[in-house]
Image 1: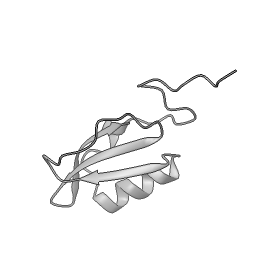
Image 2: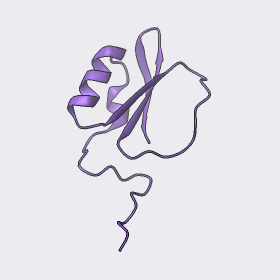
Image 3: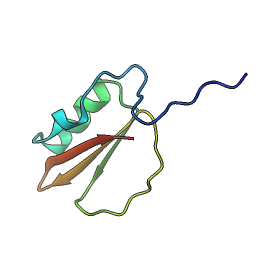
Length: 74
């Protein structure tokens, strides 16, 4: 039997709010995210073109002037 897929909004084993990173410096946010179990940390400039596939365990940061403006999972 195939394993059940992770659905959007599900991040097994990670109890963290991506919006809690807003205002942190980029390096501090990336370090904190990795220490809390995120397997992929992606920092992007505002308006960057990105792929839209959902990846469980990935956290994304929109970073401007070295500070996180927005955080979301997937």
